[in-house]
Length: 180
Image 1 (cartoon, rainbow, N blue to C red):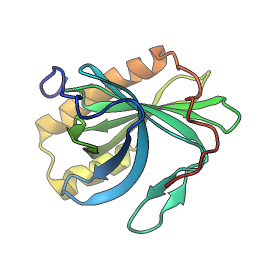
Image 2: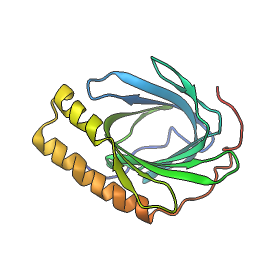
Image 3: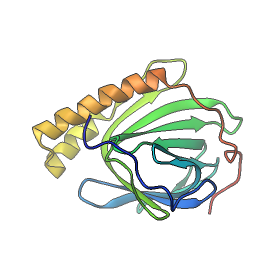
Image 4: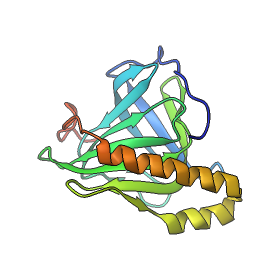
C-alpha cells in the first residue's frame, strides 16, 4: 500500500452536509467537480452519496449522471470505491478509482486521479481499466518506475476489494433528487 494510514478529522463534516468534491490530474489541474451529501463521517471512513441526475462539472463538457452513487473514502488509502445504482435501485457497477488519499478541508474534498481504475459489473469479476491512460499519464507527468509499480500494487488490492465488496443498496438520498 502507498502512503500513511490512520484516521482523519471529520469533526467539521457530519451526515447530511453538502460537500464539494474536486478531482485533479497529477499536474494540479482540476478536471472534474461535483456536490455530494455526507452519509457517514467518522475517523475511519467517509461515505458520500449523490442522487440520480446530479451534475458532474467539467471544464470541457459537464454532464448529468444517470446513476445514484455511494462513494467510500478511507484515510491513507490510495483508492476510493464507488457503488453505482440505476434509477430503479439496481446495482450496476462497483468502481474503484486509483487516486491519492482524499484530502478534507471543511466542506471541500479533493484528490488526485492516477488514471488506473477497476470495474466490476455484477455478477462478473473485477477488471483493471485504463492502463493506456495510465501509461500516457506516466509519461506526461513523469511518474517514477517505483510510483508506477506502487499504483499497480494498489490496483491489485482494488481488484480484490471489488470482487469481495458487498454493496449497501441504493442510497436513501439516491432517488431522482436532481442536482444543485
